[in-house]
Amino acid sequence: MTPGLHQAPMSPLDLVKLTPLMQRTSGRAEILIGLIDGPVAMSHPDLGGTRIQEIPGRLAGTCGSATSTACRHGTFVAGILSAKRGSDAPAICPDCALLVRPIFADTVSERAQMPTATPDELAAAIIDSVDAGARLINVSAALAQPSTREERRLVDALDYAERRGAITVVAAGNQGTIGSSSMTRHPWVIPVVACDLRGRPMPESNLGRTMARRGLRAPGNEITSLGAEGRAASFGGTSAATPFVTGTVALLWSEFPAATPDQVRTAIEHAHRPRLATVVPPLLDAWAAYLVMAKHHS
Image (cartoon, rainbow, N blue to C red; front, side):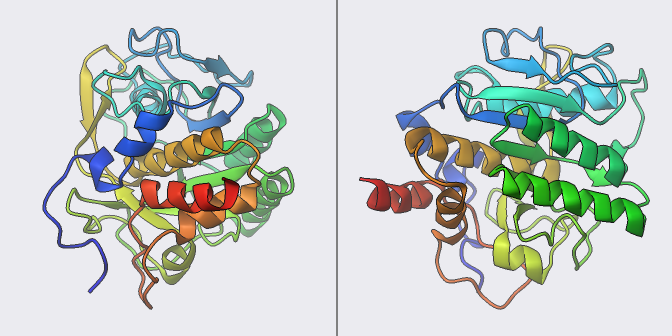
């Protein structure tokens, strides 16, 4: 039996034991998170006063149309990380800095499918985020029609993030397949599988042995966060699950700023019961990761 799959429904934060860690800290301004996603409604009242910056590029970091799929997606994920505490969103690490680097075009379409990006676009965004000082990178994106040449550039960008000590957290994807991609099997990446509020993997979430070895699962079912038009929104899938892991890493690094990237990764990936020979990664346990860090940095 996979640990954590049969418990009663809980809140998303309580499921992954983020609540006690969030009571200790709301983050530090020197922890910069690169958000590779859509643009963000930076004028949203529940993002006001938070430390959000735009990385200059071809696409604007702030929303031109609050009804676009890209804007809704980016604002939703930003809310999980950076909304004000007490808002409708999880608001995991609002005192960390958020660097917005859009890869989804801000269109006026309300019916567009989930935005996608090419490996080249994603590679450029990773490099831009690292060069802007990001210590963490959150990628809630699907790849569109990758080629071998483009995938090589994406791997090179992930290698660059590793050399610079930036931890990359990526969505496993929502195709319901068993396997991996050049992104999720990269040894420096933490892939995230979506689960329901009992900890069970979502049927549409991709799974795989690589993800089970190095990844985590996190809440991705009917998560409530910020809507780009001002109202709360509900959304699910691995895009929604990924920032729960990113936010946990940000809080751990905020509490232990002298920790190395390897120490933080080891704490969050291995502060669990033994991993089984399966395609399902263990459930994120933020408090267990904190206790591992505290033991070695007291």
